[in-house]
Length: 158
Image (cartoon, rainbow, N blue to C red; front, top):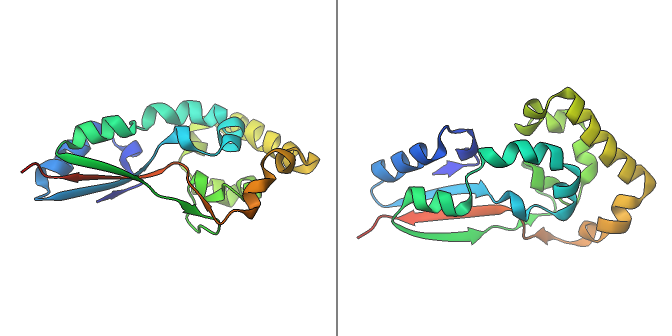
């Protein structure tokens, strides 16, 4: 099993192929489909996501690298998700204003300090002005978000 890690492997396909090689039956990978992030995150985090996208193999590439009989399941993210990945804050954008929250996410060191400040300032302005809530406040009422989490399951070919 690989949990929220394959975007750190270079190249990810080599690590996925090795998982498939050593596993006798099932390989499970929990990863992200960044295109399925909430619209506000794709908007406000766009500068960072431009850097992140090349690091994340698509779900199709992940499945192809694993081979075998592959299925993909979308995993909903609960409103009170305690993990620190981006989408965990789909209904709590204020969390991303907290430097200690950002410190647990691998994107921020990659974008650099100036870009981080631009992103955070833009989100802060949208929250302070009420724009974020006017456009996305309905998310605060939801219990779950069907977004970017994907479980890729590969069964060994028989």
